[in-house]
Amino acid sequence: MGKGQELYKKAKQIIPGGTMLLSKRPEMFLPEEWPSYYSKAKGCEVWDLDGKKYTDVSIMGIGTNILGYANQEIDDAVVATVRNGNMSTLNCPEEVFLAEKLIEMHPWASMVRFARSGGEANAIAIRIARSATGKDNVAICGYHGWHDWYLSTNLNDGDGLAGHLLPGLDPNGVPQNLKNTVHPFNYNNIQELENIIKTKNIGVIKMEVSRNKGPEDNFLQKVRKLATDNSIVLIFDECTSGFRQTFGGLHKLYGVEPDIAMFGKALGNGYGITAVIGRKEIMEAAQKTFISSTFWTERIGPTAALKTLEVMERERSWVTITETGNNISKKWSQLAKEHNLNIQISGLPALIGFTFQSENHLAYKTYITQEMLKNGYLATTSIYVSICHTNQILDNYFNQLSDIFANISRCEKGELDINKLLKSPVCHGGFKRLN
Image (tube, rainbow, N blue to C red; front, top):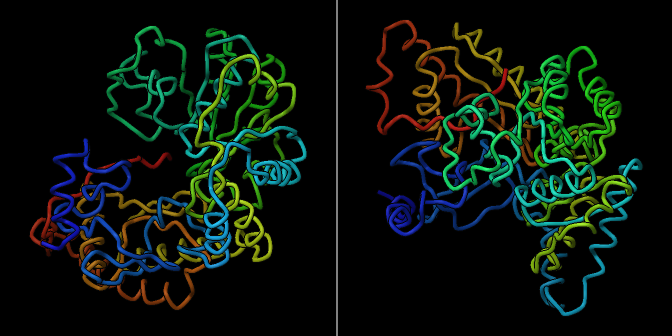
């Protein structure tokens, strides 16, 4: 057992769940074998507590580092901020400069509020929208964090979020009086949304612009019209999708403007910063309620975001990672065809992933992680692309993956037993991929 697994055994005794983030639990990757903790990260390389180096072709800090780990320009800007003082009785000017930059990128918006995590940004957006409309009820489509307002969906009929990436969530601790305030609808199903609006007195529509597939039959335009016609605030949650295919929000690609949008993850390239941007007449409703937090005023987040946006714009990172993601998708398809395997590929190009169309899909996923780890890769069935994922790195990755696919193919034919190939328990299923 390596130092990382030893430390994780201790963590599970003193930290509920073992980690602060579900998506980083070792059980999600390779139970009892995953390195668990890192000592250093740079580019797309990660060193564990035993000093072993891995190439990260998995989820890159859960999608936070489009420009790679420990980007020198961003780190230098942050270090200068630390030396000049990260916190003061006075406000940091960077928050004003960052607000101006985001509004410049999204001319439909005119006001901005900042936080430090995606869950906070979602809660802020909902509070502002409810304040603006005077209505409690929300229609949702997608994943929007962990706060009471969202998890209350599962108070309605038991498992309303099952179709929204996280099946089986128990809403323990969520006040029962939030029941029937949040109503899920399925992506590309405009009739379902229309019915909810007709029957549930909806004041807010909150949705991801796209997660695993794009809009069909002008779906986003129809949602926008429904919101406008019914005086509903439309919120686009771009905490994940922002800066992946455009310089800013994914909604720019489809020409649909929301009333509020949120950005997180990639905005600070690994430093904590999220933004809620919106139309003035909506955002000013924040003054009718109370939204405030001490550490939303620290200086590192806005500093990192400003430098991140500068580097992104210069490097046109969204173009690079989209092209890279499309190439990964093609090579996965070719590899699957070569080995007579049936896989389903989904996700934005820069957040690309695949699923084996087999009852053993989780076992096969675990096997990939197991074998790639032996060869010095952090790998699963998803790759969150960064500009550091060069052709050489990916060529080496696919060379390793080919032999693994060959063995999985033999398992599908009954020539090998996947359970005998695994050295650890099968990984847990996490966020489901929406079809």
